[in-house]
Length: 503
Image 1: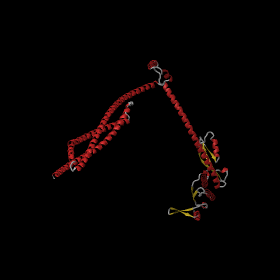
Image 2: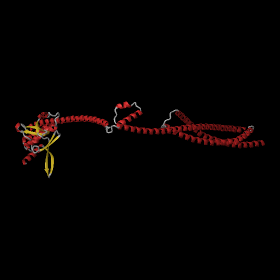
Image 3: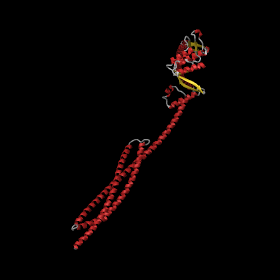
Image 4: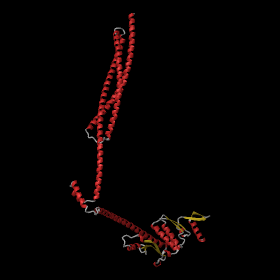
């Protein structure tokens, strides 16, 4: 019994030790998880630093390649942009380096505390537990202790792996820091190179400003020399060929001799040659301008002659057509009668002449033989000569006719123009008032003949115009107001007969 009690007591002790070891293992697991959590950001930061390292190496290679090129007066936009990017990258790398150093210090502190805890507590406790385990292996509780021992071995293995990974991370951080330091040194070297280039650019800029100022002074001096050359006037080509091979000293000697000779001639017009050349050029320009104006005047006159000829031909053609139609229409209105249109012309002295009918064009060509193109200004008007008996000796002017005869002649002229240039409709107001029955019948027949191409609207109080009408309207005046209505032919005849009877 005593032995069993001792074994139970030892088991309780081992159980307590086991619980303590399990709690310590749990704490170690939590620390391992925390280390793994901090390991992943470090690894991502390491990858980012490696990418930055590659970019900086490519930048360093490009800058090394630029070392062999010639120094330009100033950086290009691309180079300036690259310099700005490098400066930003340097600042970012310096900031990342400081963060990594701070994190490394924290990790080193954690690792130091963990190692201290392991060395001072856990390892001692582990040795005690292993000693007790060895003693317990001989007892009946060896199976449980063996499982606990294997679990403890796994924990130790994971702890060692975590420590190894932590050491690898430390070595990698150290390596990255070394590379960052190398790149910072490289950046410093490139900054020095950039500073040297900027100094060279500033020096070249100052030299360029000096050269620009010198160029301005030389241009000003050139303008002064050109002004003096212009004041000398025009020089013959032989002078340039003759003195082209002389030195400046010889030219000044020649100039001094010339000035000595020129003192003998104090009242000479030195600008006479220039004036002669200028006036000659102006003369040539004016002659060319005169030729251009003459050609323009000739073209304008030719165009005016063509237009004048077309006007003349149009007037002659229209006059012939109207004159022919007028004679034909008048013979239909007045059987046995004769009528002609007369073209009135005037000359420079104010005298007038007349051309009748179609003969006017021939006489005009004969009278205009002095001018190459006939002018329409010679035409002063159109006259009419008629004879109601058909005898040539009884031809009369318009002012010699009665009212009815004038109306008949006017209608004949209107009908003649209508044949030449017809209008869509005609409105006649009592055109037959002063005509006798025979002439009213002739006018009605003429309207019927011409009604195929135009519409005629007439007002009448005579029955002759009603015989050939197509539609009739009656106009009545009642209560001081005019009223118009459509009526029949019989009503129209009764209307005009009633008006004739009571008129």
